[in-house]
Image: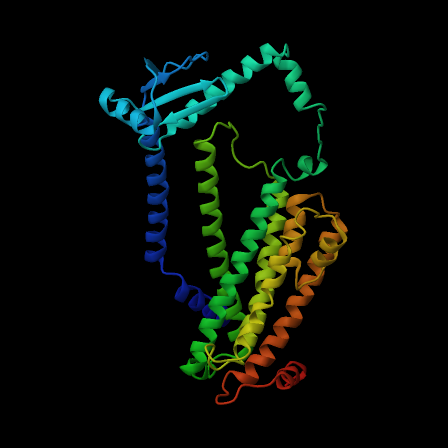
Length: 389
């Protein structure tokens, strides 16, 4: 076991450079601070008073932000822009009819949207009065029924089940893609440089495979943690600069534990697949098998198709299979109250899958890591998996 941890630590540390990680986190914090500073700066530097020339009768009352100056009739846009330059106005508002208005401005600015909203709101009130319709009656017509949806999953999982299910699917994709890239790079480079041949004189093939799978899993979890922190920062920034007063995610602790458990075991499962299969490839740039390594990404993409039906037949079946449970079971756990027997059965099948894929990966790795020149065919790989010694 000490040799496995030695390989795992070496595999993890070759992908984890603490100085680079620290710099990346500092850069992330700097970007987050810059975004916040720009938001505050933009809010404080917004134009407080808008000088607006008005041609025609303005029946609506505008806010104090707009300083209105009546103008005589103008003909065409050239005359309007000339008035703006002469009187140093921000814009000229030409009112032909209450519902037909033209705004002349030399450049685009945020106050133009505010002006449009105020004009539309005041004209809407004018129409309601002329039609003898109250605001309550209009609201009743626009929303004739009041539907309250009480989701039982929110009481068990938390109130953010939909957001959490989507985030879990994204994090599972990040973990699988990271494992794929690291395994393909490390194993093929070690095979080309004949590093493994030297190390196998002091450790066994199984210990080498176990150590690499464990090290790659730690690297994947590190990337998953980084991505989760970035998502949290983005969510915090959106909540800070929005009108909503919501706090953090409302998530059950048991749900977080189950999601992490399946993500870790699922990453272990696919790391064994990646390590064993990468040993059959001499050069990833010219190998015909490289495309097959993308197959594990299929369940990660399929989960987005059924995320709206976590209790559907497709989601149930795929959440039990070891090949797809890394994506589907965390998504279901994060979206609904999954029966205990389904979670337990999926866990048992995933552990059994890890046991057998670990055995097959070691056999394929042992048979092909020291071979060069001609890559093994699919029949050879199948025979390697079934060969016990």
